Image 1 (cartoon, rainbow, N blue to C red):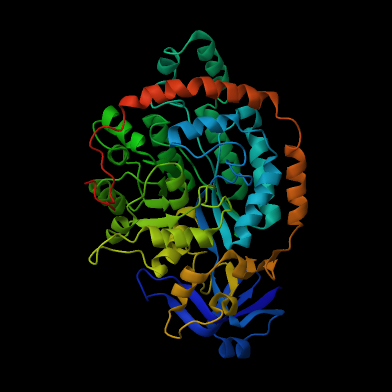
Image 2 (cartoon, one colour; image 1 turned 60 degrees about the vertical axis):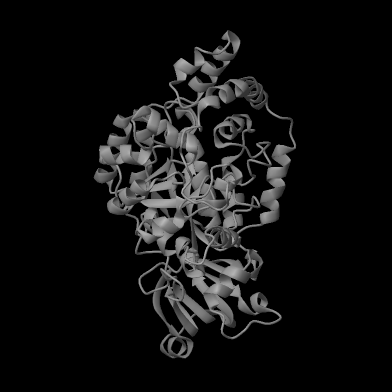
Length: 513
């Protein structure tokens, strides 16, 4: 049996719902046995009551719950590094078609190591749809990568079957293209086709493998990719499957203004209203991005208990705007935080993502709300735990939860001086960096010690990736890039009359006059 005491000058047990409301123990400690927290309290009390195999941290450290990345696609080597320059979402997605094939195991290891080193212990990983002939193998390699890194994973494969080039029927759009380009596009899309039956078969197999294993670090979710990319029948079938298997559901939603406009053009109301009409939304559903929400949309999400997974870096990089996080929190929507594998510095750093969120949602004016440090931390811990299917097991430090925690060097964070009146959670959000992380523990296992990932050699993983990408660019990637180059002007032409209607963002920062 493995036991440990983790001590901190401050132990943040649970991030608060507003400023100053976090549960923090001064000179505190956590005692864990075999990956489960048994006691949290003052250090002297814990030390007197428990014998431990090891003691970590100390009075010069800060202990907090492991961070949860609530939306991630796990590429490791970033889309930018793979040649996809940030652009409007609708054309940026196309540029991704030309990315080089890569080793799913190595890329997963690399992204997991980056996340773990910045304090993330759980990630909601949304895997890109691939042809049925290779999907099972790809999924196995991804999950092997997370397992070898020791990371907890809420895993899903997204399903996308329609409107895959623009927000119009595939064949209708293809028929408007020149003959050679149309034929190339048909071949490309047919190569990634996946039927509904194949999709649900993969889900059931994975769910059966991991459900009911109390020590498993994997939960399996369902994922319709977005409301405009699947049929209503698929959404309803997903809802039924989720109820049958007690699985959570993860979906992208109104990421861009064009996606909102698609709803207005197609149904005469917003995508959120459409999902509500179908009875799709509920506490088991999490919605990545949720940028272009109306006040009514926010009320619907609050009433149904759905989670909004906020990705501030990604939304800024892909010209999608700023999600109305303050309004959502005010009305009781559960808001979680994620990087979307498109963090501001391409490094999957959740500490920095929390800081960006806290700074981004400071609306001008004395009477307007601002996201507090405590709320920003909660977005990445307790709130983010809910859509993973592990609510009650992660996100806070309390008895019965998994021993997923992070130890930061508080002395380094506060050098050379810090006023004694500053709240420790504010200190973390204003001053904390991934470089201050000393120790990361996942389910009682130390995976980062003295700031270094110890389960394997990160440099060797990077060397293998570098060696693979040193080879000539593959023919299929070159063909896809040529296809995208020819296709892009037609996609831009398709959207030329979109975005001109009165679809105002929820936040207003500056005068137009």
